[in-house]
Length: 213
Image (cartoon, rainbow, N blue to C red):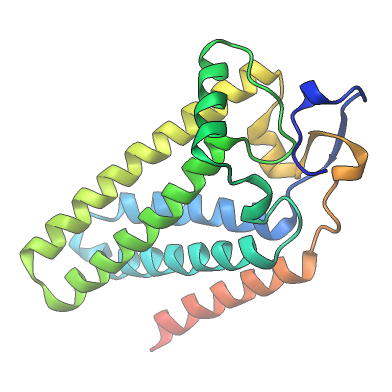
């Protein structure tokens, strides 16, 4: 069984490997690229850097979508994306202070992930159009979407902190180490180091090509 709520289990929870290396690496690289793109957004001399970071963000989002289809058990969308009923029920339980525990992403977190991935692709698309055509309304739309994405990021961070407090578990730390509370038979199959290295090498190669052409 995958991502069953702990209230339905009688076994004690253990710290197990949940997030493989590709999930963690792509997550923190997307954080860094978005932060860098945001910082350089208003400076003309950093326009190229801003564009490259934006393209990198889209490439990472594309990989995360790909990995969400073929990745390890907790990386797959099918293991954590829930229907509206279960998502609303989880949010209601969270607001009441007693949400159920999920080994992987909880339903609210899953919704935030899907929204952020979709927003990354939309922001990048309009950013590329604005960068290549210099049409004003495209640039304004890009900026509006970027501000909306920042709001989504803030909500995601707030939800993570709230979940950490309610579950008495460091969810930020779990996205660094890959380990969080779960049942031994729910652990990720492998850390998937080779895939993470391929992602990192491809991104570095993209940056090198951008700076040398």
